[in-house]
Amino acid sequence: MANPTATFETTMGNFTAELYLDRVPRTASNFIDLANSGFYNGLHFHRVIPGFMNQFGCPYSKDPKSTRAGTGGPPDGSFKNLKTGATETRTRGGNIQDENISKDTNAPGTLSMANTGEAHTGGSQFFINVAHNNFLDWFDSSSPSCHPVFGQITSGMDVVEAISKVQTRDDNPIKPVMMNKITIS
Image (tube, rainbow, N blue to C red):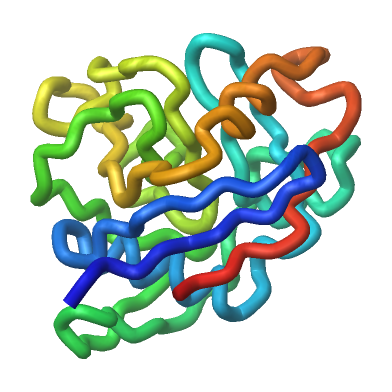
C-alpha cells in the first residue's frame, strides 16, 4: 500500500508531500491525526529562515503576531498508529516519543519533527528543510535536539522556497503566511 499524502493549502500556494508512514509510523500517524482533526487549519508559519527551513504547527500562531508562537503543542491525548494499530499517546504538553528508526536525512524538501532542544519534545510543530541540514539528523549527531524526518515534498517545492524567502522580523514573516487547510489522502 502506498504512503499517504498531505496537501498543504497556504495563502502563498499549495504543495504536496508523501508521509513516511512505512518508516516512522508514530510520527506520521501523529501528524495525520492532527491534520484530520483540523488542528493545523488557520495557523501561520512562525519561523522562516532563508537557506535553512520553514517552521509551522504551533497553536499560538493562530495569531501571527503572538509572542508565544513557537512555544505550544497539541493537547495531551491519544491517537491510533495507522501502521501498527497501537494506541499512541501525547503527554507533557502534547509531546510524542522520538522515533529514531529510519535513517532519512534532513535534505531539501523533507518534513521533520521540531522539538524544544530536548529528546521526546516533538508534538505538532514541524519544519520543512530548504537546505541539506544533515547536522539535524538523529543518526549523525550526539545532540538530544535531533529531528526525525517523516515526509518529503512531492510537488510545489517552488511554493516552499518562496515561503522561505519572505521578508521577516526576528525570523517571523512580516506578512503572515497562513495554512488554510491540510488534506490527507
